[in-house]
Image (cartoon, rainbow, N blue to C red; front, side, top):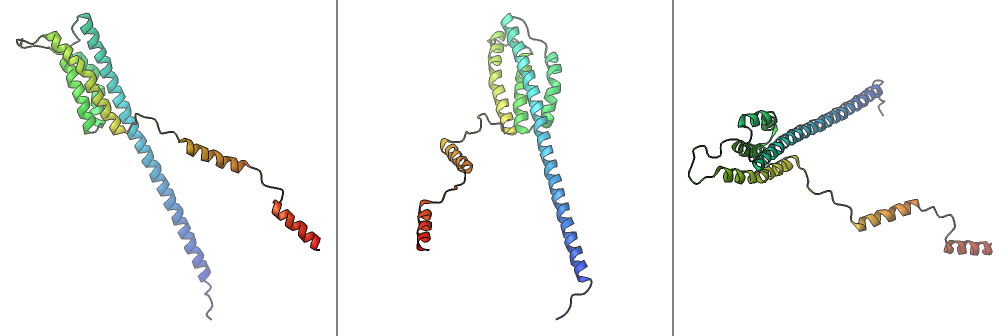
Length: 203
């Protein structure tokens, strides 16, 4: 039977050490990758949510101003004032949003821009500026709802809370906890006690 050479055991130990070091490095690299991926996903979500909320706030504020001006019988602010107010938030959405969200946001923007312009600049017969303004103003909440729905779909925002556990599952978990808390049996079973007594009498 051949003997193991003197360098065999050190070589095996070195191989296992290298394999262990490689496994540790691989696990560390994988954890770093997963952590970096989670951070990127969180940053992606937070950036878009902040941009969408900011633009929705601008749209809501401008809609309120338009409705207040209409109720008071006044003219809305010029379109240039509205553009100065909406431009920063709108540009962020145009850069970050997906196609459906960008299209829905631009639809709201175009409608509000029309409301800040002349309702009947060419004096078309049969078109009343006040009536046309009121009709466009009533369409703003509907277009806003489409924008909100597109945002919910992109960010995967659920409108309903998570489902609560059913009563059967809760009852099973309660029974399992009760069994775990039950103290261990210290007395012998009835049958085993009788067997022990019989063995004692036989002796």
